[in-house]
Length: 124
Image 1 (cartoon, rainbow, N blue to C red):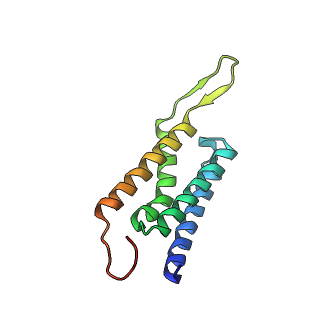
Image 2 (cartoon, helix red, strand yellow):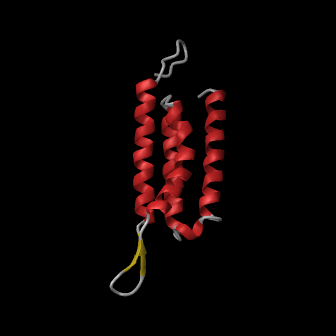
Image 3 (spheres, one colour):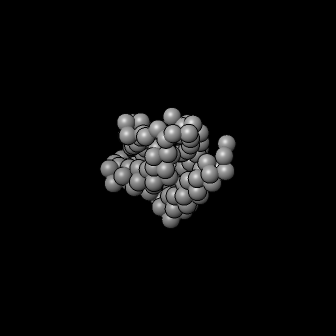
């Protein structure tokens, strides 16, 4: 790996970390799940690594922003209810995951459609 790739990936992780802190602490009441935030940050981190190593710059750059945007979109479209035992239920976690997955897929497809192969860089 070259230093430029490591630097760009580090910046992406920093932005993703800021998004995690925003969704995890100030906006925690929207989802109220400790574990789902951890799972989604691990998924986002893995996708950043995967796209960065494979030369998908646009998709890798979009991941940190899609993380937060999909969280906010999930909150806008969520529905709350009660289970038969009287406990509160919410579909926010499901919506967050689905919106994030679809957004990442679209970013990857757009990156793949409009990717310009640069001469001599070895990404392709």
